[in-house]
Image (spheres, rainbow, N blue to C red):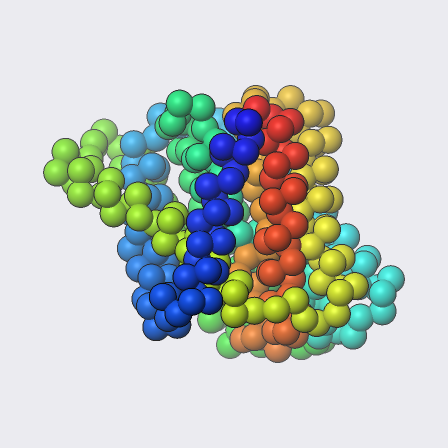
Length: 308
């Protein structure tokens, strides 16, 4: 029952977003505005506040971060192997590999971690924010390499574009700013904390509604074999690696729970945008996002059942 109580609200909100989009209550301009607010304002407020007030730091959890990064690299290798086995052309192969490793940590992963934390514990939430900030740059850089390499080309323009995206990414900026506050002797003034708190609380619901509205407008296209393969690598192989590696290294229960939740997350919607910008197969990318999001309910349920 605890697993259901932790996970059901997330997918119910996603389903509500799809329903409201279907009946026309959430129009495309409204969804775009809500997504922009969540991405640029609410989620950065959440990340900044959680990081600034954290009682933990990533330096003491390198083993957990190494397992998360290792899971990403395993998915990259498995994606290439799968693309070779099913004989995908270069453009599709790069898209499959990106979909296989790039998880939706900021929207779905963070929501699952926070809602499943016992008694609203702050330390796991803060650690999950720090790990999110650490892995996002790797996601972006590896995605560019994979997509361009699949087409046997290299563009300095694409590299510069990604560097600009990293430098202007509000989630990274908020996390770094929060980390600076945490490492200093400062503390957030009460008026700042009380202002950020309600803004931050809107971030995850808006993000989940936006995911639902977006999924309603998309369909699983691009071929069931590559879509299903990428989805299973992302939501099944990745957490399986995390269980083995995390157990072997001896991660703490909180570390293992965060790492496994992140590894079991579905493909990030940003993979569609990146594939579209860098010459990948955007139809295949969209199909991977939809399928993996639906499949992640099973994988996340299993993970929460194991670690709670």
